[in-house]
Length: 401
Image (cartoon, helix red, strand yellow):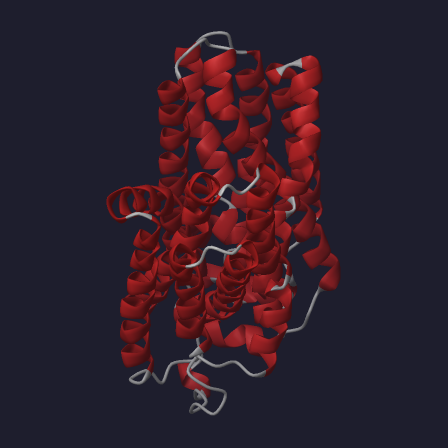
């Protein structure tokens, strides 16, 4: 694994996703400053989410056909530049257009970024993709804090800070890319000799397994529903079930997300040691009883302790899912990355209104119990998946998944 390159693209991931994390925190300021309705504000979030997620497979397909390393800095520039201009605009549709540009940038970055991370990770793809994912997760954690701090200090024009971050990162990426001749640099790069071939070369010569990829997609959608559900209900659970303050609910969610980011890295290390499918299956098997126990808890201290295995089971398999997707669609790594990082992971938002209806009608514990059924569905499809023969033979030390 080329550590310098993987940390560079992870930093690019952070500078890209910090914008997606900041947008929800900016919406209340837009409502206050310009009198936007809640529906109008939600429309901005919908535009960003749809563009950054749904069209990612399109850019992924484009990345497979004409892979260019400058897609990475261009995506960062558009994502940050679009968000930066929001503070200098007042008309709703102008702000909407700026959000669209930011969403397009995020959609452009992720498939090529994940493709590049796959190439430079060598045999340690689980670790490499987990480091790449940690950059994005960290961006979503830092984004809201940075947005509130900048706008509180400088007014709406404080959003310019996101343009500054993007510009600095773009300059770093462009400088580094000009010195790179790695696998992602261009399709005309010098081919490796047979004696130099590593695991990162094998996906280009493999075959697509759409049947296994479709099963994997279901497991990712199940994880996405669980992720959205717990992120939505954990703070509400602390407030309405345990009778705690809003601050306590926010602390519980922050601890859950922080441990999850750490678990992402741990899961990547374990997947390289024991196999990708084993980590996915183990995570779902752990998720089922933990989710059931959490829904039955009346003691907030026990519930808080359960956040640790819950965060591990949700975050640990993510990089394994991305790597397996790239292996199952070995000839279309960019497209696979667009689906696993974008389209499938956004589907959890579709189930959010239904989970909210269950919580309103029957209570929060019952909504959490519904999530345990989703975990069972994910586990079923995780055990239906099999490793493709080509991907198994490329894993180090002869391990199978």
